[in-house]
Image (cartoon, rainbow, N blue to C red):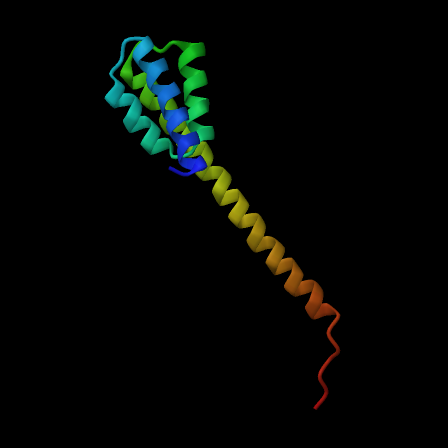
Length: 102
């Protein structure tokens, strides 16, 4: 197992412990961990479970979906920034290229 896989497994295990600690199934926690994907997102979910102590599965799933939506929004923002940077670079370097004369 690679170090990154170990980090992911540890984050998943922390989430499973938190979710089962408030009375929900370990299977739900494992499904949420898979959906969240990254150890950082899983740790955010674990923090939510410890702090909010949700009473229903719907509250857990709603928070998981909110975290996923925030991550997707962040990814789209980064893609947009990268595209804008490439566009600006093209404009900048085109401005300084010598004009072609026929």
